[in-house]
Image (cartoon, rainbow, N blue to C red; front, side, top):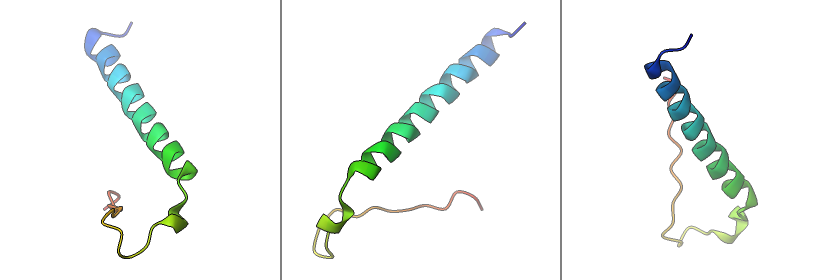
Length: 50
């Protein structure tokens, strides 16, 4: 049987996954060709694998 902390972790992990999935889905629907170098919006890609 799972204890309470396992269930809480599962909910946190599921919510984090949903947030990431939704962000990627939004990014996929965004036409990045509309952005140019003068656009103040910048997207920083952070390498978390190291």
